Image (cartoon, rainbow, N blue to C red; front, side, top):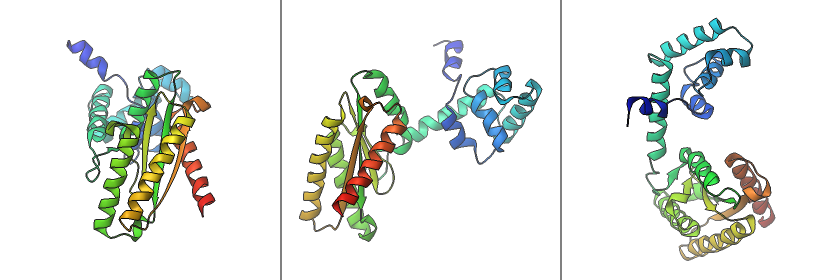
Length: 235
């Protein structure tokens, strides 16, 4: 690979990554400039969007580079991309599932690959986990990870969102298919909890891009909302 091609790999980074990595270091205005400038926009376009002069943008960029200890915009982009790749690659140490940070990358990749055929999401919450002992929590987490991975048919499609929240992706499926998978997953985990005398309540929700949901974040929000509704119905 030529030097020119290698440099092109690092020509932009998403605003979400910039905010996550740089928000503690920068002022609100500097963060706005960084999100636009590091997304690949030329300085003049950044100035136009923020309704400031080009010199003002250049001054902000100098401050951003100084605060981040980098020599150039390309250098900062390269560092952010590498840090993000390392974070995405780190699996959850207990379950071996992909972390929350990896979700957007994976979902967008599947979205493009299965465009027109749908991408569905299953959201799962384990209620009552805080009442368990440390050993019981690990056992429950491992059971959820195994059942969820089996349900979506690949460990690379299962994610740990938080201590008690998980999600799985189902490529090329609609909501009805996802709902059936979620129901079977709920039954499987319910049986495990009963067999192991584990006082947990599993609530699940699902959503699909074929419903008109236009982003991975919209899928998560819809599935979470339906999970809460199903939990209220069971109360």
